[in-house]
Image (cartoon, rainbow, N blue to C red):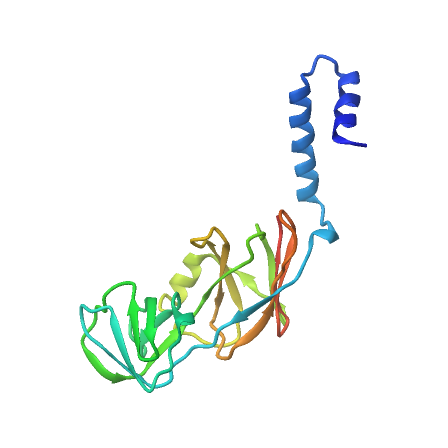
Length: 219
């Protein structure tokens, strides 16, 4: 039955309803049905990479400057958007850009004392999902990970100092492209390939992180 046929059939039973109102009613009920049923054809998979922390070489920083200079480092442009921490210092800073293998810029000026030849870490704990993902059902790494609020993570580890097997995840809203984001906690010590949905627009999607770490996304 087509949409027009359905509207016509309803109007025969309830002739006092306007055609536009009937169309709106049908669309609302269709969206409710789509949302409340686990349609198998609306699921898909794709790969995502969880990034291991990077700390090769040493760095020098200057109070009040956003420039970080490395020695023995091999930084790449792909590190822009990750976060930088000097040794185990507080706080950490988001990386704005990477000029070359030994120079990067922070979003904000370094606020602690000058330091030279220091150990450091560049890490990523927030990941963007596919554009057609709307709502996360669950994440599994060998076993289901617990969803926590961002307040819980901030309260327990505001400096993101813990590394290891991911046990928790939290929703981090939308990125600058309006893609959904998640934070995985603790941060993994090694790079992991993960499977993330592709799929069609307006779909239920499945994000599966290799090593049996996966996230189900629900529209």
